[in-house]
Every structure is written in C-alpha cells, then in structure tokens.
Image 1 (tube, one colour):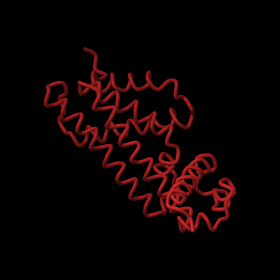
Image 2: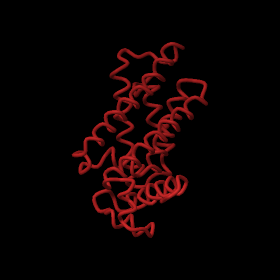
Image 3: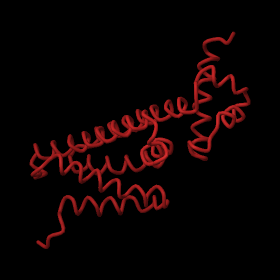
Length: 196
C-alpha cells in the first residue's frame, strides 16, 4: 500500500507531466499511455487517481485558472491609479495566457467545447475578466479619471479588444511587441481618436 506522501507526490507528478504533454501535443492527441510512459508507470497507476484524461485536464485547467486569477489580482493591487491598474491588468493577462498554454487552449479550442467543464470554465473566465475590468473602470469613474456612459458596454469592449490582441501575441509569437500594442490600445481608449 502506498503511503500518503507518495500518493500525493505521484498525483502531482501525473498532473505536472500531463500538463507538459497537453501543452506540447494538445488535448486531442494526448493519450493516457503517453502520460503513463512519461512518468514510467503502468496506466493503472494513473487510473488510481483519475478516471480519464478529461479528468486530468480538468485538474490542470482549474489549477491554471486559479493561478491566473491570483496573478491578475496581485498585479492590479500593486498599482495606485485606475489607468496603471488597467495597463498592468492587460500586460499581466497576456503574459499569463502565454505561459498557461493549456488554460489558453481551453478558452479557444473549438474541439474542447463539447466538454461541460470547459463550457463552465469559459463562462467563469468571461465573468471574472469582465468583473475585473468593471472594478477598475468603476474606480476610475469614482476618482474622476474616467468618464463612462455605459459601464457594461465599456467593460465588454475592452475585453473584446484584448481578445483581438491574443492571437498575434500568443499564436504568431509577436510577444516582444506586446507593450507597444498595449500602449497604443490604451492610448486610444484613454484619449480617443478625435482630433483635439
């Protein structure tokens, strides 16, 4: 019989190893055999902890989702003005999605849509992102820095603009251009495009 420490360590090893394999080959192509071979254990060892690769993937996504929330909140809390908070939020968000490959794939991969847990994670992600943006915008309105007619529309518009930045930053690997693109986006957001 396995000791508790060994059990926890093996479960974590399975998750960490699967995370790497899913990142490299994607959810669809990864098999339980791939994970078992990578940790040099029989497939039955994995089934002791997880019923399926979906269950392993769910554990990874939930962990990465919490990690992203924590990083965003921690980064925003360090800033003192709503404008700085919004800029930091945007940069931290892109950096986190670039690093948390499986979480990002869960948000965008059409193949994964058929899984109920993915749909729930996507809904939760959208709600969390909109709430963070609304909180920053509300603070900016309260301090007189922002003038916003419709908070819900403004928050959704910013979220959709960020979604547009994801592809070139993450997929096309134009990560080194992130700050310039973000500064341009925020300049338009804060100052508009009308000639003054």
